[in-house]
Length: 163
Image (cartoon, rainbow, N blue to C red; front, side, top):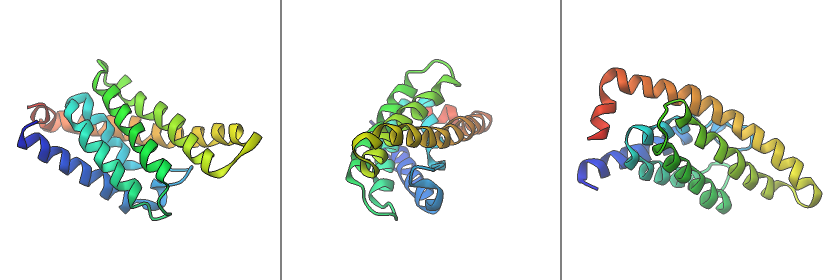
């Protein structure tokens, strides 16, 4: 990875963390719309950006104003990384928004349920939290991500990211 790509990843990481923290009231918890997740469309254009998304998510989860949840730091950040890597492999712009929605609904929903419920209450809690996280991800990744992709293409920045 060259200096330009590393710098781009650093900017993406900073933007992801800053957006998450700036919009903290809606970025954390089981009912969330983490607007910064719109950035998960970037690997569709430039696969190397997955690294910046991962670092940004780690930072956002470590700086969570509701308190550090180490499971979320590890598994939530890994969900974003895996989603970014799968997004990079997508051939269709609309399908590129799906990995972050599905993986975060399952993984982050599971982490939140695990820290909130035990015994027989775990499974229904996971289902509810997964649907809540997934709905927020749908808004951020499909609506926000596709709008971001359109802006990047219209401005010519999508081509510059690929270089």
